Image (cartoon, rainbow, N blue to C red):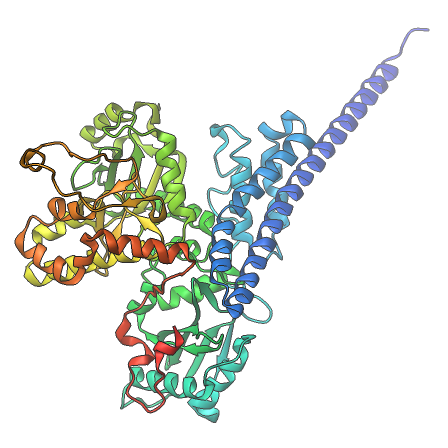
Length: 612
């Protein structure tokens, strides 16, 4: 029986319906897979942040117990948390989803489903960064666009906060300053006794009144606001707060220590933006602090330090991957709104690292040369940087962000710099159209090299810098770090005038070094010889030689020997090694000695020697 026109049309309609049904089912399957991938990634960041908070809660317990070595272990272990969770999430995706799901356009749907899941999330900015970390290990670089990853943030954290809020508020006008501080002290919730809580209250109150001034007249909105949880680092627990009066913000911090009997006491009140910035210096170890909503903590800290970029604040809170994300966004924004070129960084060219900078941007970019004057491998140098990252820092070693496959506009490079980079590190430089991709580099805060600073300094500035230089070495020693090459060019001067070490290719643990005196020459020929007449092992260090290389200028020598002469004696270094091996952790605090309460002239002053 021949088919009628109606039959043909019906068949065509049926085929279209079937095709539409198959397409719908296929689309549903893609959406289902995208939702499952998004859920897997979100579970990864949730696990990471749960462990991150537990780490901070453990830090509080260890501080209350006075277990300083455990606190250092917690700080070191936490640094590896993030990369471990990223590897876990990537492994789950690779084993649970087809290859096509991992490198094709499905990631646009994955991102959309991921954003929908962040509506009530307490750490959405961290989740977006984690999404990027996972997806960029799976996708080709051509997918690194906002359609597929979070080049720009999708969820605002501007008004996000915890419940209860991230900071507490106290009103001194209602019951008096001492009563407000007493309530504050109770709310801290330390599970250890105090040396003398009432004495601490009086001292803190007096310090705050001094900061406010004799003529201070409180307004109706006078209040004290403090972050809900303490900030733990090394032997200190820091209360971070601000005084609000007539809209003006006055930052302060109170460091708490423990005495030899396990009792807590307030060691100082640090007032003003400069003192707070010193706590959050980019060269210090990261704080451990339990935060439900980290963006609320960062907003609070920004009110105390308006000049401090959010990237550095997140980093100092231990969220270094979020710091890297924000820094990269800041850099892209700066490149769009500036016109200067990348040039070689000022100072003596390094033997191992090539360093460049953008004059209008306060950072330096460092990459390991392919050909190095020092016979060390790339892996060894990267290991030194990782050693510094994991090791407890005392504010004398510059922190770094490590990046891979960073794309820079080709036109922003000075031709001489680009030629130099291609010459010294060709394996790390890739041409990609209008972009130059650097496969691996480190980024640090820009500082003035100490050798240049000394050349320009007057007598007073030179004396201060040499004293600070010696202090930097001493504090690195306290952290069991021997800088190796102590030439001035390897140290920098920060905006606050601190001396910071930043050349890590020769760093070593102090306890791995063998500090020796130079043997007496056996003959006049020994004394005149150009080569040592005595055997020298690979770990041998002769502190007597430091003066020959570092103290050629008579004025510099006089200052250094007056304040730090013992650094030229092997006995000093061996004594420090012995203390470290015995488990002694020296006190190194991020505020000057003269602001500590042990210097106050009141009848309640403690004999601090009994507290050490």
